[in-house]
Image (cartoon, rainbow, N blue to C red; front, side):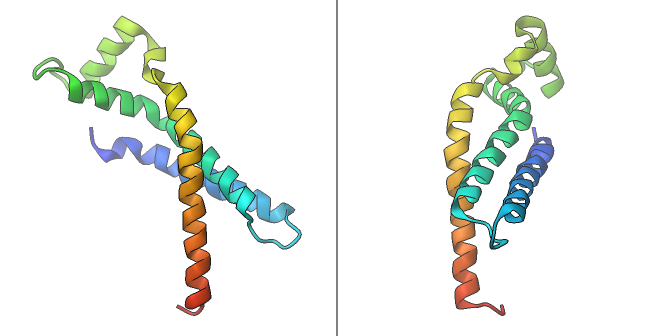
Length: 127
């Protein structure tokens, strides 16, 4: 399964982050983002990513871990087998630990990005 399957999830990831930051800016007295909004927006973005991207990841993992020749038609075969044997909720098997990890991991990621942006704007404001 290619990275194309994660394109919608990546789009949602940045959409959620930017939307929350825009709302935070609109409600800020200074019109600037702050650490709390960055942490919240980053964490929420990570969770949104996995809500949309988890089914593709589950299918990819099953395909990769299956013995050679198990699935003759690739991801389509994995999907059909999974739905028939385990039902549609199987596409979200393991969602709890992923969500527990998603919030702090992505909050930290966006915090680091915003911190780096502030630093680079300070040392090279016209670059």
